[in-house]
Amino acid sequence: MGRIFQIFRIKDLRNKVLTVAGLLVAYRVFAAIPIPGVDAARLASYFNSNQFFGFLNFFSGGGLANLSVVMLGVGPYITATIIMQLLTIVFPRMKEMYYEEGARGQAKFNQYSRLLTVPLAVVNSYGFLTLLISQGVINRPPLFSFITNVIVISAGSMIALWLGELITEQKMGNGISLIILAGILSGLPRFFGTAIVSYTPALLTTYLGFAVAAVVLIGGVVYLNEGERKVPVAYARRVRGNKMYGGAQSYLPLKVNAAGMIPLIFAISVLLFPQFLAFIVSIFSAAWGVKINGFAQAFVSNQFWYGAIYFLLVFVFTYFYTSITFNPEEVAKNLQQGGGFVPGIRPGESTQKFFSTVMNRVTFWGAVFLGLVAILPIVVQSITGVAVLTISGTAILIVVAVALETMRMVDSQLTVREYEGIE
Image (cartoon, rainbow, N blue to C red):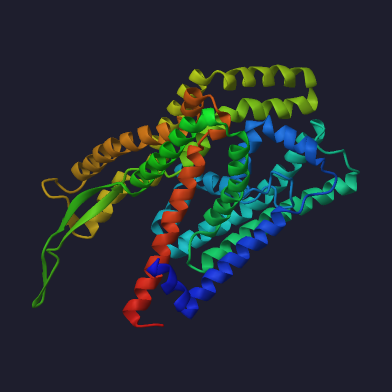
C-alpha cells in the first residue's frame, strides 16, 4: 500500500497513472457504442451458444460482446504480430531485423506489424459482418452501409491499437495487454452477479471449493510466470594495458514459461477452427455448414477428448513457440563473443547443446503446467457440475501476467525516482 500512495505523491507518476486510466476509460466508451442494426437479444443468445466468439471477445477487450465499433479490438494486431514472428523462421532477413539490429530493427519490425494490421482488420471486419448476417444476428444492410461498417470497424481496430500504444508510451505497462485486461475485468460484475443469483445453500461447499481453487490457481500462475532456471555464467579475465577486465560471475535466467499465453491462443484457434469453418461454409452452403457445425459441437461436448487434445496442443505449441523465441545457437554465440562461458562447458557447440538440453527440460514442466491451467475449466465443471463457476485459466493467466508486468514497470520507475531524489 505504501508504494501505491508513493505513486500518487509523485506528480509525474500521478499524471501517468491518470492518463492511462483516462485512455482505458476512452476505450471502454468505444466498446459500448454498437454498430447500427444490432438485435441485442439475438446477439446475447448467439454468444452464449458460441464458444468461438466468447474466446475472441477476450482479445477484443470486451468490444465484441455488443458488436461495438471496436469489436475487433487489438485482435488483428495480435494476429499480425504472430504472423511476423513466424516469418522470422522463413525469412532470415526478418530474423536479423528483429534479433540482431537492436532497438532500430525492432521498431521497423513493429511498424511492419502495424501495416499488416490494416488489411487484416478489413478482412476480419468483412468476414464477421458477413457471418453475422448469414446467422441472422444483424439485418443485411444496403451495400453502402455495409462498406461503411467495414471501414468503421477497421478504423476502430486501429484506434484500439493507437490507444494501446499511447498507454505503452507512459511506461506504466503494456498498452495492448492492459486493454485486454480491462476487457476481462469488465466481465467480473456479470460473473459475480450470475454466481449470486444461482446460489443455493446446497452449493455452499462447491462455492468454497471454487474460491480455494481460484486462489491456488492464481498462486500457481504467479509461480509459473516468475519461475526460471538460473544458469551460471563466468567471464574470462582480460588484460588491456595496466587494467584487468572480466572475471565476473553472473547467471542467465531461462524462463519456465518462456512462451507466455501464446500456446493457449494457438491451441484454442486450432480446436475452434472446425466451428469457424462451419460458419464460413454456411455462407455458401447451409446444409454443409450444419453438418460441419454438428461435428464440431459433438467434439466440444465430449469433455474427455476435448480436454485431452486441448492439453496436447498446448504442450506442443509451448515447445514450438519457445523454439522460435529462444535460439541456443545465438545465445551460445553471443556469450562467446562477450567472453562468457558456462563453467564446466566448452564454448561453442557444447554450450549450444547444453542450453538446448536445459531449455527442453525447463520447458517440459512449463508446458505441463500450462496445459493443466488450460484444461482446468473442464475439470472444475466435470467435478462440480456447475457451469457458472467455470474458471478460465486463459483469463487468469492474462490477468496475473499483465498485473505482474505492470507492477514491475511501476516499481522500476519508483526505484529510479528514489535513486535520483525526484519528488
